[in-house]
Amino acid sequence: MSDPVVDKIQNHPKYKELRAKRGGFGWFLAVLMLVVYYGYIALIAFNKPFLAQPIGAGVTTVGIPLGMGVIIFTIVITGIYVSRANSEYDKLTKEILEDATK
Image 1 (cartoon, rainbow, N blue to C red):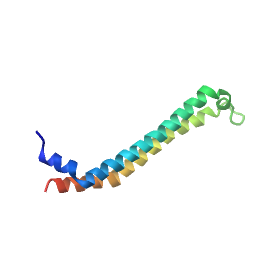
Image 2: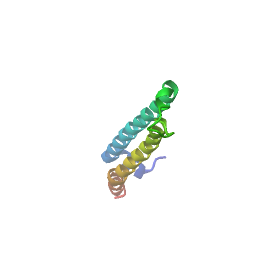
Image 3: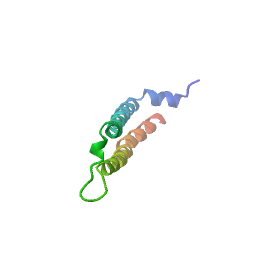
Image 4: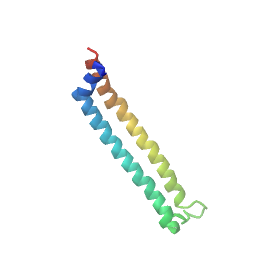
């Protein structure tokens, strides 16, 4: 059995637009995150001397700020996705639900 409201939503052109936009943007951010993360892991695996270089006269090495950069990058792209979801995707979802429940 199928629900007529669900069928209306799934056949709505804005629903298809929402799925395409959200899916494409989500995959783009996921690939970007994988490149950054595995790039850092590859540096750890293949270029330890680069990461072990001290910064200045202290004990901090290049690897520490790069690792922090990976963490900060993750937070930033999460914020970008949430911002886009709250502005663009939520608006489309509201329009779809309003049309489907008429």
